[in-house]
Image (cartoon, rainbow, N blue to C red; front, side, top):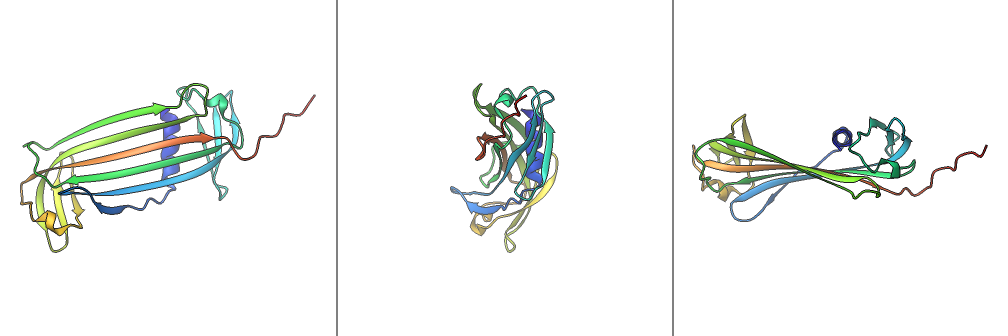
Length: 195
């Protein structure tokens, strides 16, 4: 699945995800971005596991499906492949009980049952406890320092910034989900020539 997800990552580069700020519960703010790309299987070689996908503009994406793609034999020329990437950042402006900046990463994966068209989702989340370095209430920005870097975040809810002060510890979570789904194409592949 990792090699197929690498192909998804390549496909995601071509996507234009539009992040939208939205207010969640209480003192939590966040941004969510979602992008999808649809390809059609242009060529597939089951022996070498080489797959060529083509998008609506004619651009191609070529990759070798790893052995972890158990359902590759079910894929045929003309099948539709949809890549969906969802990214979410949630910043909790509630003070953290932790006194140490930290970063914790987790990853989960799921796959389609054997015998069906390939499909799967990999989700990676990163939870960070960070220190508030600066607050610019007028501009609606807060500067936070995590264990690896310092970032400036935009906060639309100015009232939420009033609860913070320099050196407070807060939590942020970044989640990224990549889903790949193969469906039967609208046209069936040409029948092999008779000998």
